[in-house]
Image 1 (tube, rainbow, N blue to C red):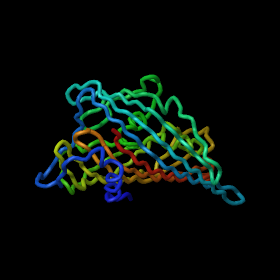
Image 2: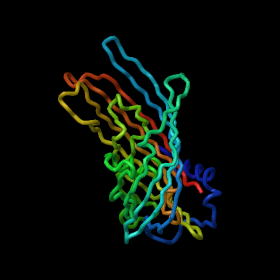
Image 3: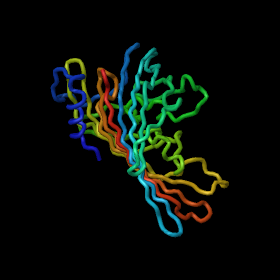
Image 4: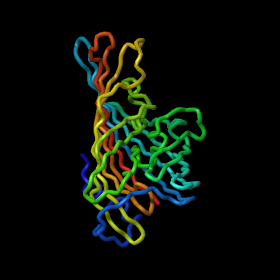
Length: 299
């Protein structure tokens, strides 16, 4: 699991100059409420970096064969709030750039061209808890996609709502984060995970500490969740095989009251999948995705 001290080190290295103001440790207040409450015309740019390891074991009558694929993904996203109506916020998400590289075994790195879907702008409506009420691609309005993909720029690859009620420092609350499978870069298409899949987790988050500043308050969160075993893709009796998967997600995040955003974070997703022959349930392949994403707000 990613420990909170790791995110403190990441914060000290990557964002001190951007966020430094007078700071005091959190004391006194018994409970607090986190809210997404940006004003019109505010803009936040987030950069994220993902490192992926994909291990594939293929089974045959004469044994098994193992291969390893590695990848990196750099992404820049800009969030612009263009309208506010009560506790609803119209948000424009522009995916400015996406750069993906992969290599199989010890072969040379090769770059994958960003697709129209990777770079498509998104219009979303969010509530004051950062829940996505509605979202669609601006230039591809008829393309269906999970909300975690549409709003993947809000916290790197993670889509995570703020807690509903008040919570104390040291307290915990239930979370159901979603992760966009776009970070898997389509590498899993042959193993049961398509680019439109949504990875859904359930678990708990703890509010570790707060840092009160003159113009900002930083809230430090640690998350641990599991993905229950589930079937991927569209089950069909005509398909010769099917895939099932399970996994875990761990994250450390920093929420900023001034930026109305997760300004810094590290997220690790480990997902295991098995592909089986439909006729006799024999194991055809076993796949493990291990993805670590780090992100931060950029001035």
